[in-house]
Image 1 (cartoon, helix red, strand yellow):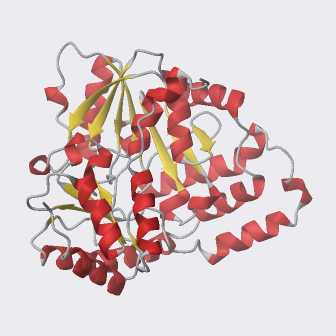
Image 2: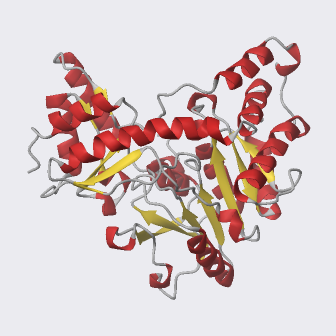
Length: 383
């Protein structure tokens, strides 16, 4: 009776089925190994927590934060972009704090599109992208991400009659863990500019990179018609703090600020202080967390390959994306795995039609637990 068309258009979540399956496994006495949610299990840096603790004792942080109060965080974000990517942005006009990148994307689409506009989305993709597009009333055209193409979209395959308002990209990628180089972003930005489309890059895994690989920024292709979303949830293990920032084209940032001004205030000032401190920490602090996930990758991927599953060795992110031979229904497999072994993974179909036949692992457990999870999954039939 009260559901709007926008709410009704939001796709249902497969993860509700997974939660129910985990509940049945607990009731049966199984120990749960939850690898289905990409939430870092590592703590934020101690120095960041100390800044937050100090802020909670400062009564000046308890009020509503105004835009002017966000200057330290905006300046810290600009400093991070300059130091890490060599990108110069004006913190007053080209940076805006977010209450997490997921919130930021939903508000961004409301700010720069009108109902009926076309959004180009990768398939598979992070499920909330589809929800944000539905709330904004957008027409979604999907771009297949294929293993043989390195899970990069073929923009030249977009039909001539499609006139996109925006293209949404995400590298290092969720769910595939694929990466893109700076040349790819230059080509994508040029393609969008030729068509008057905005290029949006969701970049929450910027610092979760392994070995010698370092993720580039889409902003290296220039700020015109480009906006990038950053989050401290993964890189600094601050998921529950809900803080990030958008940076890029000044006109886009202004539109986003206008929409956000009608919907929310900025993050709590204490969280802003903690985030600003985190962005100014030496690179080695973030690399320490990445090394933990790299060790987990090195435990999980060989264990899955030992089952005969096809898994690329991720260069970044907190995920492993595994093709399971003979798998036709990833949702049924994931539910069965949770109910019978206690191991919860994300079914590939939850990320779009292109994800069928795959499952996603969030590497949020120690190496020995990941190896045991793979052993248990080897007992689950795939047909």
